[in-house]
Image (cartoon, rainbow, N blue to C red; front, side):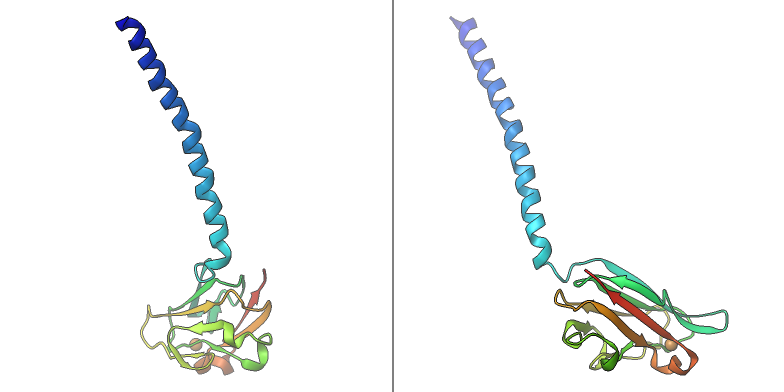
Length: 156
Ligand SMILES: [Cu+2]
């Protein structure tokens, strides 16, 4: 009798263990589903792009000067060398409606960042999830005449 009940008990334990595995699997796929549904909502946690503002080969430049990002992405402009530098998006050289979708953490005026005077400083530009696709032209004000220009292409 005892042996029988022990076997029965073992069977129950095994059944319980066996039962947990599909449950875990179900939880994993449940976990993946909310992550997927979070993506459209989490528009401010997109990819991060790092751009240097620097002085190389006798030229003031953004590196890279041309790059692509998606709505919801974050651009970090680093004052690397040759500053002061800043980031200035031109209202007439960005897609219609883009101004409202650009937020600059160290904003001096709409679409224009403060001047970064200390090496290592960063200005962060966040593209809203509603950012329209197209070309976003920007410059650095102190070095605009020296060709410090850049183009961000926003694409889905
Ligand atoms: Cu500059």
